[in-house]
Length: 401
Image 1 (tube, rainbow, N blue to C red):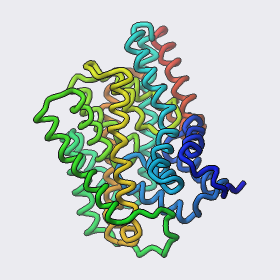
Image 2: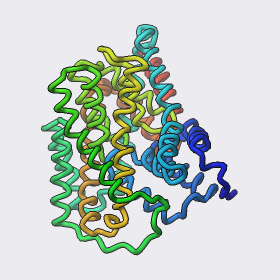
Image 3: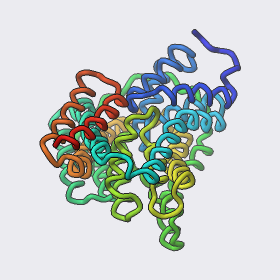
Image 4: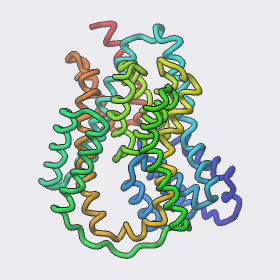
């Protein structure tokens, strides 16, 4: 059915459309992009197939959650800046609210939750990340040079496990791939149905970099827990290439060593995040609500949620005016080939540390992770169902082993 009327151009209408998607979009970022295509290209015909593909390519190129960025851009194209905010809120709030409630439940009734069930959630995180590694490696590391970049990135991050180590790996991979790869010029494509002046886009990009560089200085000059949280989560949202799963090591390095969140709570929350629809970046809301220092609870969850998604807004509205030129650049395409391979390496490192080392202690843990992986990859069961069953299985195993 084609919807060409003005009824879905108001921010409220955009919010309701994305709220429905936020309540039903299980399966991770690739599945989300499929839901968006069916809703906005096939059914509502907001944009053409080629324009949608170009928009997805832009958001895959930018750091941050690709599916959320596509949603922000679609809302922007339909109802301006208010539409962008409405699209983000509708798609994000359902899972964010559920994860904050889960964090509050763990804080209030953590002792009532069987330890085996929490361990099962940590084990299923192994399967989820392993599936992501396998799927991304097949698509992004198709030859020996990119496999080599992936392996080198993994080794480097395991030796230098820090946020700046990840930035360095991505920069080196981009430089190497500029020398190694020479993609062919792509065919002309339909322009995206979004009109933003380059001068306005430049202002948004300037704000993005000003916050990225300025927040660490402010946090150092004016020690404050809330400001430190904004700095950490804004930086995570700014530096993560490859989507939600790759944010795991960045956030773990920020919140666990500092004592903000325990490692057990971190991995239990990450497992729970697989059972809710919407973007995986709403895991930030769980972490904010789980903070051992104030602000925590609802306020902490909201602060971290806004901080981790803010870079996506600034990058999408800032980059769109320049995308037509960048999209045709063979140098951009070459650099992206190496960056994508390095992203797989970062995810592989995260699979080992902290996911594997914090969850797989015994043969039954490995067996549960293997069954969960087969259920996800070959039985094609919904991720939320695999997570729930794994939690129950972890509890049952703890009672008999």
